[in-house]
Length: 414
Image (tube, rainbow, N blue to C red; front, side, top):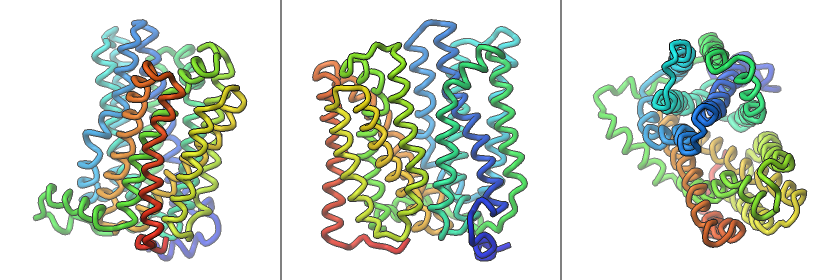
């Protein structure tokens, strides 16, 4: 069945489109395995060693692989069939996760092993994430990418929101071995669901095996640099990611030092929940922006994001902070979903992996950088001052978008 036929067949809701629903169910199961791993590994590391440094190192392993392998993964995915690649990655992740109960049973789950497992499963996630971004347009057609990403982001947000309490529950009742056996089952389920998807996939770089990977990588970067809208979205993502990292990474610090809430105060969890609720609502809002001029949409969302981040930094009460971070993350996540979807629509099918991997790598790498740098700055300027300083990257992105808006040279139909 061709993409055009699939699009006509599912002209109503994507929820009635069988190939997409299989992808949706797979991504939900995959998100459960990934988010659960990201929560449980540092939690378990800290519980057995009481080392904050080790817990932080294990957490860092979630991000480092994307920075190292994201762009390379884009080249490989563009040479492969995304569906088969996705199935292989989920199967590989299940094997990695099953190794944890094996070592736990042998009493050989050392600190080095924890870091290694964190790095391995995060590395698999990089390749899965890049291939998934390339596969979605093949499943739903480019005209429905915004709608599809909205559904997928909503599912991931909900799963991530329950990953924390779910991880605590599993670890307390099943131990580390049983917990990772459950997480491995989610990855295996994801692989099984993906193997049942039947769609026509375009021929990719496999038709040009004589081309070197470096040449294909350079081609992807030339496309990003030469396509005005994609270039703008990439630059905007860098600035917005730096600012977002400052907010995401220091919620507890802000609540403690600026709002005078103790680190064990339950109201901090409400502020975090408010941020998650904003991301969930963004998954519903972003698809409705399809068809609007992209530069105008980006300018409006950046204006809201910058203003709300300033408002959050200046709040003095926890309820005001909750409202501010809810609205801020609504604007920020809407911008992220819109940018991802726009890149998928604009990029040629044979370059989906490279273009999306480059954009996601840059933004993903900027978030922890923003968190770390803002945390260091907060020790000298105070948390409010540090957040206001890290408002500047988002403002710089807004200024850049303003120039593009004035020139009106970046408009494309989405």
